[in-house]
Image 1 (cartoon, helix red, strand yellow):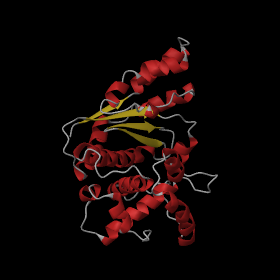
Image 2: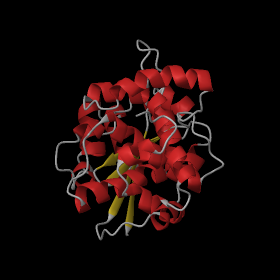
Image 3: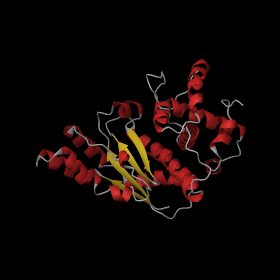
Image 4: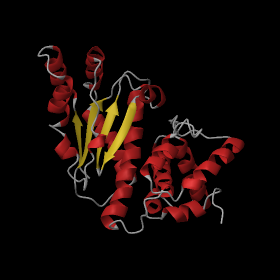
Length: 283
């Protein structure tokens, strides 16, 4: 699979100049220099509008200048090599080019900076956006990890949406849990020295309490519910990214019971089958 990397820092410089020197409207300038030149190619395979994944404008211009200086030093060749490791570990029969667009991420996003080491990924139906804040700790080490996670989504989506034409999918929260659990375990298998903060273990008592809540929505197809139970919700007393932790635990249980199964084979196994092989399943 051919990998194409777009580092948007040169356009970020144009955006910065337009806003600072030409006094252009910030939103207009962002769309002109950071979205319009790339979005049609990024979203070329999407069967529906995915504009909600467009990178957000950066308002702190002095901070952006510092980010540009660091992001411009990224080695495309080195990234190609690291990204290829994920592709080789989970091959996909797809002749289409894989596009990865690297964008600066607003420093105001404290969750991304402090809990995600400044790297947040988005899969745009086969292509990918990596939003990166180079002012965060260890941000360079986490770019390949986040790529691996998002690449797994591409491989999973290729099997179920392209090869299977959506047959066997039901859009439930359980399916979402299993999908994210597989993606994180795949990334962890390649980068075992990195421990994502969004995927922390719970002790048995806490896990039991939280699972009692999550278990009730496993069959839900409501995307609003999916968001709350995956990313956490204070009103529901659900900790940050609780769904990621349970997804990982469910898939890890299944793999422990079936050690002969690799990640390529795992993608093809229905979510319910994986769930029934975990400690959380109850008839």
